[in-house]
Amino acid sequence: MAAIEFPIGGIDDGVVRLRLHADADLEPVAAASLDPEVLRWTRVPDDNDARAMAEWIGEWRSGPGEELHLVIADAGSDELLGAIGIPRIERDERRCEIGYWLAAGARGRGVATRAVRLLAAWIFEALPVDRIGIAAERDNAGSCAVAERAGFRFEGVLRSWLVIKGVPRDTAMYSLLRGELAEQP
Image (cartoon, rainbow, N blue to C red; front, side, top):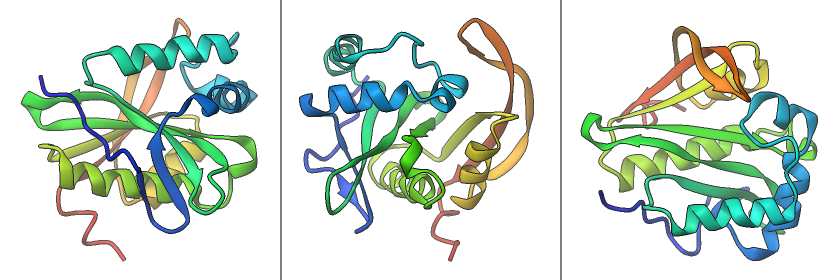
């Protein structure tokens, strides 16, 4: 399998920038990921700290490249706003999934929607993918709204689809097909 290669300088839309993790991100990412809303809806460990984050990011960097983990940053100041990535790619099926979370201070400003659209456009340009999915816990209204605002179509609820911290969770499934992003205003 070929590794996912992301531009070293990142990509941006003038408002948000998606870039690879840097060592300086360890503490801010660890602190932001301990927000109760991030912990509630993601697989981020409850006891995350900068050392654990360094190990986790080190595993990403040394792995086979079949996942992509990025920082969402302010395009001007480089302030950490959250994280986004491709936690799963199925090359034979020509599909992947996007996952994301935002720091508390970045919510409600359209940051996640911009980041999802930016990453989706890059995926369709750079990877042999025809379908991008977003699997959000059904009760996570914020994440579901981001998927819809980014142009993903709701497909239904998959019962007990995600297991987060040992608990099976019903999941709202959204998808975006190649060509659909360009059709949106």
